[in-house]
Amino acid sequence: MTAANTAVFTQRKPELLGQIVILTGRNPARLKQAALELHAQRTADFDANNLASLQSFFQDLPTPIDHVMVTPGAPHYKAESRGPA
Image (cartoon, rainbow, N blue to C red; front, side, top):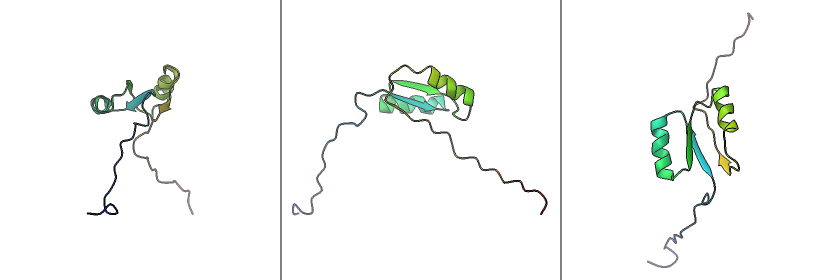
């Protein structure tokens, strides 16, 4: 094997190291497991499609927060209603 064929792997520092990361999700059991795996500082279970829950989540956040990623589930598609042609 030559040096040209050898892949070089380097260890990177975690990009979120030292930053506040909060995981959110609707399923408390899956959220708990993800938090354990990722060593999350905090979790919040709520439905991001529920505006009141989403507003409450942001109002209750400690500051400062480095990253928050809220992703509601799959998009909901609705057939467009059209009047008579």
